[in-house]
Length: 449
Ligand SMILES: Cc1cc2nc3c(=O)[nH]c(=O)nc-3n(C[C@H](O)[C@H](O)[C@H](O)COP(=O)(O)OP(=O)(O)OC[C@H]3O[C@@H](n4cnc5c(N)ncnc54)[C@H](O)[C@@H]3O)c2cc1C
Image (tube, rainbow, N blue to C red):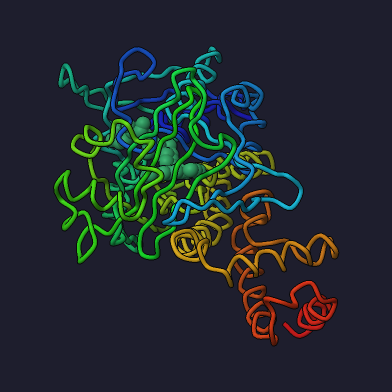
């Protein structure tokens, strides 16, 4: 395979991983990142201090040999702990066989991937370089330095836009003929808060779990950090009766938390300062197509498919982009026209599916995790799945603990919905759910749908 000059715009999570993949293939890789080097300066990451890493992400990290390093900084979360208004806790395991999702620091993971990329002699990363213009015919990109205002023109054979949801590379594609693009802000925004560690560095709540305070139209979640703290995120409507717009003073915020999240508030010793200083950020869904131009320029990660964070799959799907691209590269050698066309054709239905699944999971997390019918449905599914391996993989497991295509998982999830609707309508299901008749009914419905 011919060595190509590869330019990557954006050294975020996906860009840094992609640099490792491209370097392993022997290409000469130049990465340009708008921000200063996060390993040398403290910069505000802007959003989610930690993220949930799962199967697809691990697989992509394994592909470049960094999974073991990442494992050292990851905290397993084996299930959800739901907090009721009264402070009662309900545990719900994520997997059927003790599987976990993993809390990792966004900054820590990004820095590790940059270090890994730079271990390759054929990779360089330049910081303080904002992509401002792209020539889609030639793959030439212009980068502007914030500090010196100087513009550098970079020639290359291939240009990858991994510059996130507000991608400059994508902006240049938007202007071309028959490029489809949509940007949707959902009505909810989010604010990050924290629960600091105990004095001895231990966690104030169950460490190996993702905590959720489901409250119908809004929710609070918390993920553990290695230093004993939790990062909490309030997902809340931007406007309306109960929203960031109306809960708009510290006094109102305290009263609101006291009423709805009392057990969390007690542990949030920096609440006042964080409520006042931490921004409210927006959540956006980006869809576009095609993802490539002229066999020379392509988008990966949030640049082509930004989704809401409720399935914990944004980064995981961006990492999976790298795995899929690598597989396609291995099949088609130097034929970049075919590689990029096949990549976008294969991947687009999966990106659309996870975008839909992520919105659906928002409803599940904020609403249904506190609902008795929902919890029973999960128990019935888990029991059936254990007794009939191969016949039923719960949707959450397909998305999180497998690499079944997102589009297939979505279709199978819809089939499961139809089946479970009938099962939940069985007489006295809450009392009789362990009756063998329930299993027989599911087997019968599997034949029907
Ligand atoms: C609140 C929240 C929680 C989340 N939780 C999870 C989770 O639990 N699990 C999960 O899998 N995903 C999660 N996500 C999604 C995840 O953050 C994104 O999917 C992921 O960051 C995408 O990576 P990326 O590299 O494509 O984009 P980004 O992380 O946005 O990186 C883009 C990079 O490009 C740089 N850049 C931007 N513009 C330019 C330019 N013009 N020139 C040069 N460089 C540029 C940026 O500075 C940045 O470094 C969450 C997102 C949010 C908002």
